[in-house]
Length: 85
Image 1 (cartoon, rainbow, N blue to C red):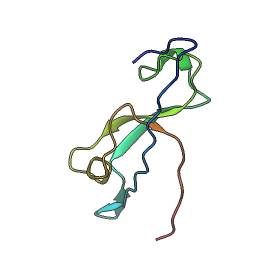
Image 2 (image 1 turned 90 degrees about the vertical axis):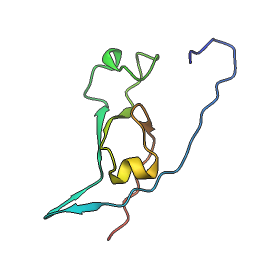
Image 3 (image 1 turned 135 degrees about the vertical axis):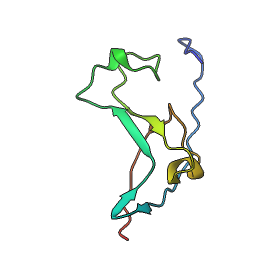
Image 4 (image 1 turned 120 degrees about the vertical axis):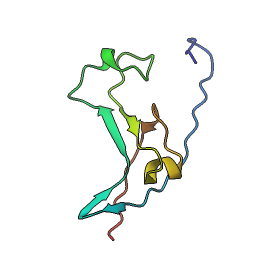
């Protein structure tokens, strides 16, 4: 998907709820992230906008909570809301 100046852009926003999984004494979510303000946005493989300092999913554990919730590699994290256990 590429952006053409002057053309409308379609964004799909989907709420994903992930519940932590206990592995021994650890609680896991089953995914890794990359990007952010301290990274070089030109190295971001998930965005054609090389000024994008967003946070992206870089790994999803097979069968883990994130995969079950529908998270995929390349998804952009827009917001995180903490819900106490």
